[in-house]
Length: 370
Image (tube, rainbow, N blue to C red; front, side, top):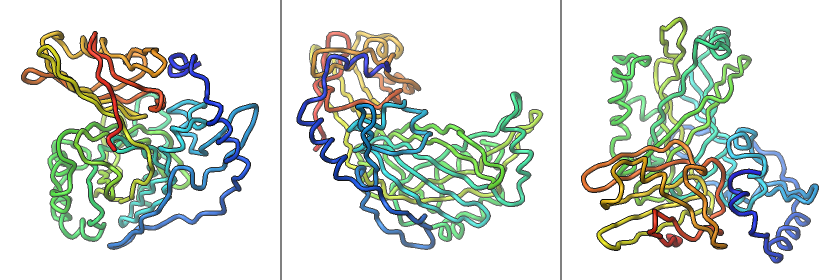
């Protein structure tokens, strides 16, 4: 039984919801074939892909599979996650490809809401790369194949051709195996410098597979914005630097330029948020099915770790679950009179069952942003 199930084991599925799901399952027909979309200069079409569209619903052994998604999402969120209504509302089949000279990027699927998005990214290496060497490093216990530090931008107006025209002169002077050489560029690329999300963010990239036959590295990406902007309100552009390979302590870039791909996040899932001020303390929280962000200002906690250990999710049935058991990758810090952090949930959280965030004895009621 997973952590969320433990917290929610006393919450039966409402009869009306079970009946509605059964009706949808019986009415659903398998989707037809799809063709991969190629993004080339200037245009791409917004695809009206709500999470339920194209999902093949089945009933087996009493379980309702709402969403058919890639095994990478199953590995990340657990085998039962795709059988939840939350997964249905957060899922998008993307199938977008961007050809950037000798590098090809493909985003297969997305899972997200207005503040956090997970993406499955395929990075097809240039034909000149020694695939056997990459495979050996991938399989090695000592050598490594790295994950790129992807940057995210709130725009769909910049194409590969425009990026290359604006920034290629900078790329020729960079060592893509040395962060000190290209890190500053990623933070402020000329062609995208006015399109970044405001305020802070957190991100991660995990290598999941390498296909030597096609020369394709597959990554699971996550991006969480701390800004008030909704990720789904505009296209999302990813700037992807070359991945690297380290053999015998020497790091080598697997391409000599970055690549770019743009998608339109399109799923209905939304986060919950709340704030409270009481007795000299102010606190706010943003909770999505995928991640949590908390800001706290007060005198009760000396260290960020103390604050994190004292936070719980409060469910409609009165149950509570410690955040340290629900989340991973806590990132944040202490500044001035306050603290802030964000973290990714280990499993999908059903927001319809979450009522509040509790910080010690202080309870922050949550509400939808809409």
